[in-house]
Image (cartoon, rainbow, N blue to C red; front, side, top):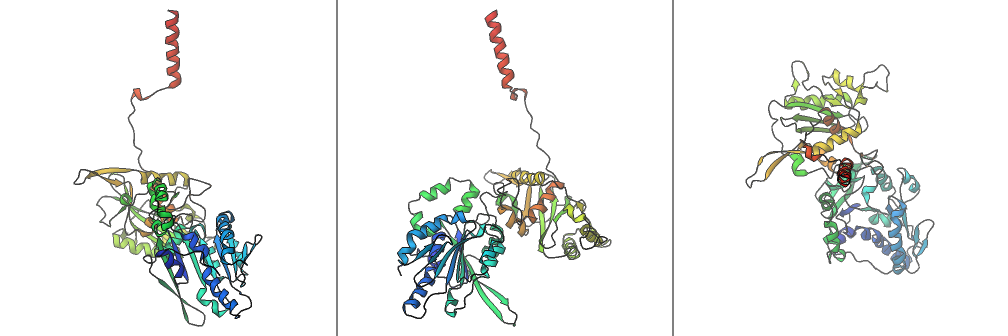
Length: 491
């Protein structure tokens, strides 16, 4: 067997040789992730080829699979395999119908896709020893988990090779779950041990690690500087994502062009006196619930001073959390045993009857029973999202720094302790079929929560003074000049 790919010294080599079961490699565009994923199976291939040549096995039972979300995106990887896999093994055979390579030792290397959400079912009969998922942020979390469950082998010799490798830029509809699960859990390069208790009481440890990669980690592309120059021509939020590998910015994101971390994230601070205070909320039963507490100052700016982001809690339990939070911030009437916050919008769907009992209380009524009052949100998604964008795009000048540079205050801000909105809002993807919204099924609970808050406190429009000279009617002006010309000719 011939080796035709040598990883670059440093992070690419670390990715290829890391012993963890789940290893991610990504960040900057051009960091060499696709090549590393395409050729990672060669470690297992070399192991099986040696066993085959020593006569230890008649044929290898090993299978690997390189995944992209849709089949057309596999074209380049397949083309690269057609150019190179026969150089690795001259006896390798390609089955174009099944998209499978079969090597002399018997190992099978497949190319697969999961365009529809449940396309993982196509792979339920497979046992993979190596899985390589390119651009993981294009996949759904359930797809990842289901494919992860296919990693096993009846051959004990394969145990050291049973792994899942993934690569991605911080772009795509799955950015939020990938960041939550692999990027934010630990500093880059730090191994995380995931411990699981199984049915017989034992604990099984499986390691995962994320390796942050940059263009400089791929010298073959970075050396002449032309690719970097092309990335630097992009808008700031695109440059931050694709060159800096910043997972807090998303090219093509719904709000990414409006989000400014310095303007919209502020230190935790005391709530100024005499400010209007209220809360907004998006309730989820099997999904996340997001509730945000706001104050509105004399400039009309909304500042979030706390956010509750929880999952799988009933209305009564969430009401208990609200009570404790509002006691802490002085928003709870201890004598009346109720919240003092009024005009607080909640998803209007919470006023529907309880689906489990026609005579049972609605979610809103359940909250009220525990002293937490709400008003129905305005159900206007287009204008609600537009109001969020409007607040993000506007600011007021509140002073000058020592150099005379204006100090600006965003018209919507989040204190640093509001972790979920700060983490999610800048990277929410844009729906490819509707540029004014996010895709269905996206983790948009914080967006809905924010949208209800902004919708109940719309920003006052700025009135511009327009002079008469600013008006210009091209058609009227042409007619006037034509008349003057005709009168001159006659007279």
